[in-house]
Each structure stands twice: as C-alpha cells, then as structure tokens.
Length: 343
Image (cartoon, rainbow, N blue to C red; front, side, top):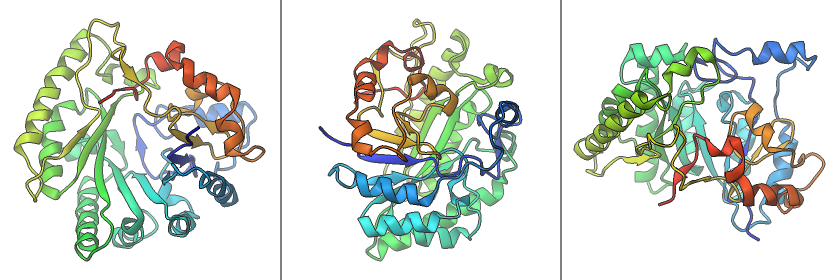
C-alpha cells in the first residue's frame, strides 16, 4: 500500500495578521473564537508542538512516496516561531517545502524569507484576491496592496537569482478565492502575474462560512454560474495573450466551467484530489483526511491522533480506508469545493 506523498501540519491556526472576509477563523463575521470560549474550551493559542512534527516526519519518511510538507494553511505559517526548524527538517530529510502565505512575510524581511525558502521550496502560494487596491484590501482586510506587490516582486527576483546560479527552482503561485467581489478582475490578475514571472494562478470556489458572504458565491444560482462560466473564457484568453518573461504561458489550476443543471453541485465526475494521497494533521495531533474547513471535516469521522498512534496505523486503519472507498456518498464530499476534474 502506498503512503501519503505530502503532509500538511496545522502549525498555528490561531496566528494571523490579516482578517480576510472568507476566513473561517479571522473574518470579521466569524464567531468561532467566542463559541470556543462559551463551550469552555481553553483560550490558549492553538500551536503545534515541534516535537510532534519531528515524530510524524520520522514515521512518514518510511513511505518512499513522502517527498513534501506544508506548514499551516490555517493562519499565517510564517508567524510560527518554530518555522526555522521546519526548514531545517526539510534539509535534513531531503524534503520539499510547499508554502501558502498571505504575502505579508512577517517576522523577517521578504529577502530573508526568500533566501531560506527558495532552496528547498517546491511552490510558494501567495494569497491574492484583486487586481486593484480597493478589491484586494476589501477582501484581505488589513493587507496593503502596494506592499504585497513589492513583496511578490522581491521574492521572484531572488527566486530567479537562486535558480540562475544553479540552485533549486521554486515555483510561485497566486492563490485566489472565486467570489462575486473579485471575479471580474481575474484577467487583470493574470496580466499582472504573467509579466512578473508568476508560474501559476490557482483558485477555488468560496466556502460560504457566514450568511454575510453567501451572496459572494459563484455557485449560488444560475446567474452566478453564468457569470463564472463567462469569466472562465476570459481567463483562458488572458493566459494566452499575456505571457511570462520567457514567453511561456502561465498555468491555470482548478479553473473550469460549472454545470448549471446539477443543483449547483460540482460536476459528478470530479474527484477528491486528497484522499489516499495526502494527510492533514491538526495542531493537537488529530489526523484529518483533507483540507475542508476544520469544523466541517470533523463530520467525516475520527481517525486517530498522532500523539498516541503511528501514521502507518491510522493510514492503514479500517475507518480511513472506508472513507477512501465511499467518500462520494458523504454529503460534505458531494459538494466539496476542492473536487476537480481528473486530467
């Protein structure tokens, strides 16, 4: 039986310096922190013990497939105080680092971060949600459009220098959330990204965590789907017209038209890209099968905790194997934003 090729560690879900409106934790519409307090749960920050990361990596390298790790995609991973140790572990075990960051590059300068990350980086995904200052800053609250743009340019300059000097090539991706608020600007984002040397534009449809943003979904009704399908054609056209400095085409990931005859569900032949391939580990050691919002993925069941069990034991366990086999019958999975068409 094959093992996971990549593991995501939810290192510090309570640490972020932005308040993006769609974020389940940090949006101004979120009440998760207050609910946890009302439930009597500890108000202390949820931060993963670095010893747990070291343990899991030691177990995971027994799988020949395991080549890459991702620090937290919940919160801002560069705020995790043990991030330098994660980088060190990548060097020790010859692992690639796949990073998703909000683009603010806290605690160090963007140049310092780039010189640490690029040599062992597979891909750096920078959250980006507008081609204009007004749109970007109205979605990614407390962000600074000009500063984020300067950071992106600086990171790519260092990425290219390291590669041209014979080092590792680390791709750079702009990661967007598809919303009514920003969809019209995607062709302009493509133009900007391609000219700067960004490798890829990746996106996903909005998780409508809050009533206040439900009308932002591009899958809300037939009209929203029509608008989305129209912009997909323009995105593809923009990627063809606006080329990267070397003349190559920017890659588009997870951008395809929706079926407006399926009760706004994803296309039936779309598959889960994560099950039996990747692992998510919560800050407290809980094994998670995917990247669905934390409260929602708990509905998939309890599979074990890495503080008490080995990765191999959970991976091969009856409960996880049953999910891998039957996920398409589960309500959460039927309408998951992350399912995609197999190429």
